Length: 408
Ligand code: ADP
Ligand code: ASP
Ligand code: MG
Image (cartoon, rainbow, N blue to C red; front, side, top):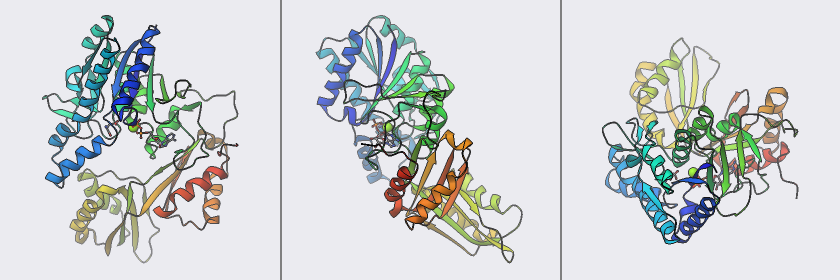
């Protein structure tokens, strides 16, 4: 007998029939003698719909009130699942984040979990009940409803598994595991039996939506056994996220390709080439709480230099405003932005021991006539910024060039 946390994503609870299907699945595991805690997302599309409503009221919705609104999506699905479970004779109880007491900080729309009260859940499990918890939400020390950022139900699942010392956290979604790249973009993508935490963290932080990055961080930190599986298939081992590299199979140099459509480039042209200039540009951007990703400063010429960096697309207008406000002080010639870009990244621990990975990547893109606007590297990844119209093509040709295509 094991304690299992099962998280079901938006598509998996997208209709009442699908919620009934989740109930059957939970009942099956319960019948095998396991204790089950279920974490649910809102029905697919619901969180976007709620954000849309909020934006009809305020262009930039008040963060506290936005959390009040978007947290309702998950409250609906947990109630419905408990009804479906009861209807097939399984005793169950639902909890919102505040009812469990998933305590977070007060950073509305991107709160971090600080503590989870497991007393009620343990008592219910001992009484033989299935516990059904709303994902994506918590409560701050003052009792305000908070949410954990888009895709945050994954993090609720892993955090509950850590708090309850569950034997496994299963993330049920609309694909049957983690693939070499998004199978919607490259149909030849291969399912991975295992992937290391290190690689999964990179994939998630570079844009692979299949797991929210914080859920992977949490699982690594608290040693949670984490598996991604399909809610639409009865059988299958899915993908296990592991600490160890699998030494029994020869690893490809590249394990996967991630991409992100959500970044925009900011260019600051003709700034004085002197100490402190990066700080003068990026300091005000950081003060405005805008996340900066890739940064490039060109080699200076004639005492001036150009500076470029990327920010989330939704923050581009605000970033330009911030920089225009300090432009006279910095002394730059112009500030401009481009939101028609994307970032494509190759990821793999195998890169550490192989040379020529970067040149293969750049040659492959060059052969397709794709211009690289920015490059950044780390020990286990190389990212490039491209014109967004090349995204699909770039991912497809790189997938092939690094030998990741499934052979039929
Ligand atoms: P859920 O609603 O279940 O949380 P998400 O849409 O958040 O589901 O995540 C699942 C989706 O992630 C898949 O449908 C797939 O399109 C996408 N995805 C992106 N990269 C990958 C990858 N490397 N492997 C599998 N799926 C991926
Ligand atoms: N419903 C939330 C979202 O759409 C959380 C989640 O699905 O994980 O982002
Ligand atoms: Mg998700």
